[in-house]
Amino acid sequence: MDKTPSSETAPLPGRIRPSLAATRDVALIGAVAIWGLWAGAAFLVPLVVALLLFVLIIAMADRFRELVAMPAWLASLLAAVVVLAGLSLVIYILASQATAFLRATAGYESEIDAALGRLAGLVGTELATFLHDTLVGIDMSRLARSTFGGVTVMLNSFLLIVLYIAFLLAERLAFRHKIAKAAASPLLGAELTVMMDTISTSLQRYVGVKSFVSAVTAAISYGVFRALGLEFPETWAVLTFALNFIPSIGSIIAVIFPAIVALLQFDTLTPFVIIVLGCGTIQFMMGNFLDPALLGRSLNMSTFMVMVALTFWSTVWGLIGAFLSVPVTVCILIVMSHVPGLRPVAILMSQDGRLGSGVPAE
Image: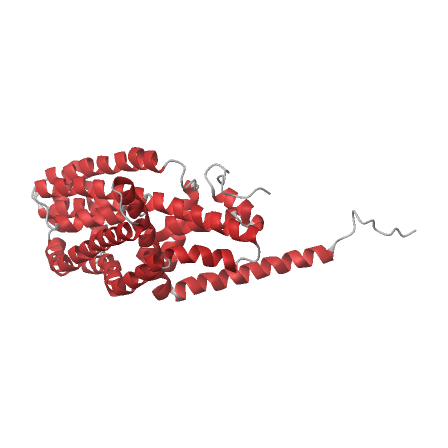
């Protein structure tokens, strides 16, 4: 006698098909979004850089008003002048020394054998031979051009970034009112306002702390470079400042570059050892003690997600994407935490599963 399958054991194709359709739609939307990020890099990168500089200007303006009583517009103007002057100085130093450094790379390539001969006594012949085989295959000029390529992009987009910042400052107060009026309901408007405040607070703390820690690290490293007589000390100090915004590997690269130049420039290993141990210790202390102490739990993003974000944004936007990886991912995490359907993803991306007090209850 045939038995009709019960509702508990019978297959439910009607439920499976929507699940597959939803997976397909998400995959298609994700692929189009990634392609859009890659294809629109020329437009999106200057805009994101301008937004981060705008956040830094607002944070600095608020600090000016805490120190000295002044109108909000004056504090914003002073902060904008300081931030844009600092950015101009960074671009000027790298651009002015790029040509001289590219010319010097030819001399560095001819010094590789002599430098590795000196290094062999410290690390051993086998490792020195391995380094020789590796370095011979590297085009130093091409590596230098790619390193300074991000500076060229920033220089070409500098005027556009300044214009973005100017209009953002002009519409700072009006934008909040427009968001509230554009929302479908007062509750949604209030939630959007809370989300924007959370993003602004997190980014202000991150950009402000990273700028301060990177500036202190760069200043100390510059003193070491100057005392040793290293070539292009300003360049290495600026790169130290910039590379500290790249999580994990940025501080390592900031030590490797000047250490290699010291190995090629000097006839002894002493400057090389001083840079590796001295600047390496500075980077370790800043990155593992001062930086976490100042940032605290303001970001609350998983370390694994930091590395995933670094890999993803570097692939999509290149070197500039590495600098922007953490703040952009923090913004995405905060937005996801305010969308009920995406909140589980935000919890998985967080460090300890807590999303903060600004997240609405289920």
